[in-house]
Image 1 (tube, rainbow, N blue to C red):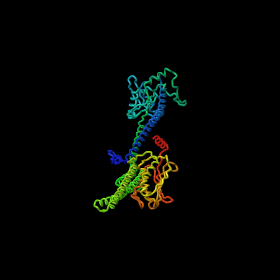
Image 2: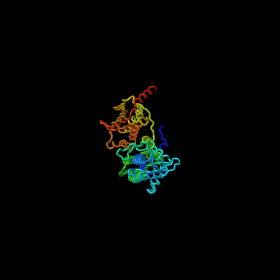
Image 3: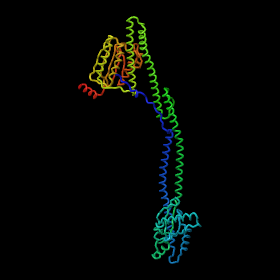
Length: 547
């Protein structure tokens, strides 16, 4: 029985077109990646700037407050020491004196804004003494709003401590300075004419002074709006830079991906040409290294496909010719028998012999064509040849039994020189016998007296070598280069399939077939088939011994 290929497996599956609703060009992929990178970079830079600016604003505002509070505390200290508690000092006199001192002082720092106010702690009402509308309306209104927030949040209770409040979305840093003597500056300059003891020598007098100024406060504050505005300007500049970078990235993506898109379209058109059996190679330069390599591979593929297409067409032409010749002979002799063209019995018997011979020739040709087609399908992965572990000596004995009758009929001899016993190969027994049988048939056709079969292991003992040689004229030089090509025939060749099939079977089994002329004359064929591993040989020997 011959192996029948699975029709469902042999039929190729028609490729289906990708029905994806969204097809994104490759340039957009690059552009999207660049946009993501730009956005991430801007986001990280912005977070770093925000964090750095926050620390910077804290440091700068505190430094400005330190300088302003230092000068303000010196003013309050000097002012309290100049007040005589024994005299009758009304609020109006104190306020007037305070306002005059602030307005005329050269020691006040301009690092921060100063607001003087009085606070009734029982009612929570306050009065801003400085600045006033005569000095600056906007400055006065801002100071009133700041002091209102300070009183609302109780910030006046923590003297000489930096605090913050929110004013129209802007952060205001402030400190409250009291006129109480215990909040006066601790370090004084001995050369300063206003440098006096912090506390007067009379505790009662000092207590009266502290009581007199208990409701007076100075608020020193710095609005961080200018810093926030600068930070917002930087953020806006960063966003504008990101937008500009995105636009440049778009242009860059188009410029950089155009050669890639153009090359891809060229390869796509080339693939369509190959699908239409147009195997002309792709010419021209492809920019991308990977696509250039793909183009080279596709050119090699087109060359192989063209070569296979030519071989297939040649195969069908030669096969049809080889099939037509015996069919015409069979038809001619059959019609002659039907219409009585052959009058004598000898002529009719000769005609019948020709029909039988041509039928055998036709049957052998068909068998060889089927076998070589099976080898081709196995090589392409569409068919699997069934194999098993086989004793090489058994194959030799079988092939000798097969061809002995032909040698007896031709009155020629077979010389056996089998030097192998326990050597095993992995393959299909029928295919291997057909391979040897075709080579025997070829040698029998050209030999003079005998054909020699030798079987041995090669030098490395990795392969079994079946050597078949004859004592004929040898291989003609004009045939040597095309000896194993399909439908390549010598002077006395039949159909040119036998040796091509022998080579295909040997290659299917991981081996090969070599041919050369002997020094003593005649052709020599070496069929080399790899041995199975030693462990597999021992397993096979054990199985043979048990059976």
